[in-house]
Length: 130
Image (cartoon, rainbow, N blue to C red):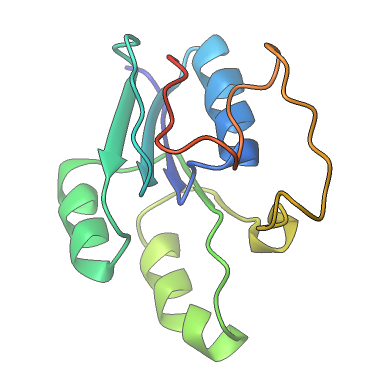
């Protein structure tokens, strides 16, 4: 059985790279994101929704994740505590990466767009096939 990873708010630049690497390594990957994604990879499930506890509970009923990567930026550590407990009880490994957010303003940071970048904050909706 394939190992399964959940990427929460994984529709950004780092999530795109993580998704591609996990798929290359043979994982099944579920990504929750607001942006649209076109995928022809049967090991990728793209869930275009806002993340909330009801959605997570629904996913956790269907799967036990080998790992969860959370890219959400929470307003403070108190806001994250209940979510963290929920995530830890449904995975063997939790990675919290909200501090690695990409700058939200493309006008203040130069981002070279090349064919090697899977997608960028400049693209809406995301049309890069994975």
